[in-house]
Image (cartoon, rainbow, N blue to C red; front, side):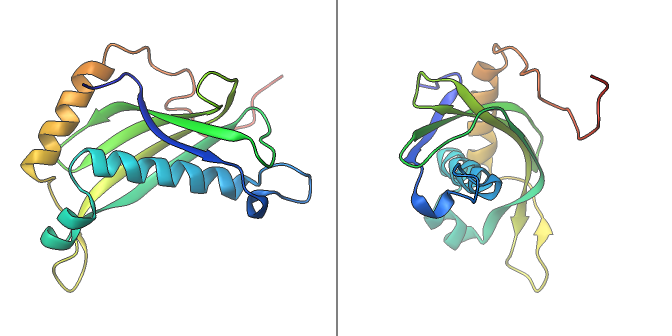
Amino acid sequence: MIEAPLPLIETPVVADWIDFNGHMNDAAYALVFSRAVDRFVDRIGLDESVRKATRLTIYTLQLMIHYFKEAKIGDMLAVTGHLLEHDAKRFRIFARMSLGSTGPLLATSEQVLICVDQSGETPKSSPFPSRTGAALEAILTVHARLPLPPEAGRGVALRPR
C-alpha cells in the first residue's frame, strides 16, 4: 500500500544536533531530511544491495529547506515524503518534518535527485532501473492527488514585508 504522504523516518533530536542557541542546528535538519530521502531511495528499489550489484546510486542536485519552528533535544521528529515528479533519471521529492506524527510543522525540504552510474571511471547520469521507474510511477500516481505544497518550487529571495 502506498501512503500519501509516505512516512519516511522518526528520530529523536540528539545532543550533538543542538547549537549555541539551544535548539537544533540548521545542518542537523539537513541530516534528518537526507536520512529520510535515503529511506525513500530504499523504498523505490535502490537499496544498498541493489546499489552494490548495479553500481547505480543517487546524487542530490538541489536542496531547499524552509524552517518554521525550533526543535529541541529529546523532541521526536517525524518526516514524510511527497513525490512531486520524476522522469527517466531524476525525481523531485518534498518532505515535511513535524514534531511527532501529529505535531506542528517544523521544517520542509524539497530535493531533486538523479540516478548515477558509478561503474566507469567517471560517474555519469543514468536512467533508473525499470523496477525503480515503476515504483516511482506507482507512488506518483497516488501522490498526484495531494495538493502541491505552498513552499514547493520557491527559491531564496528577500520578499517585501
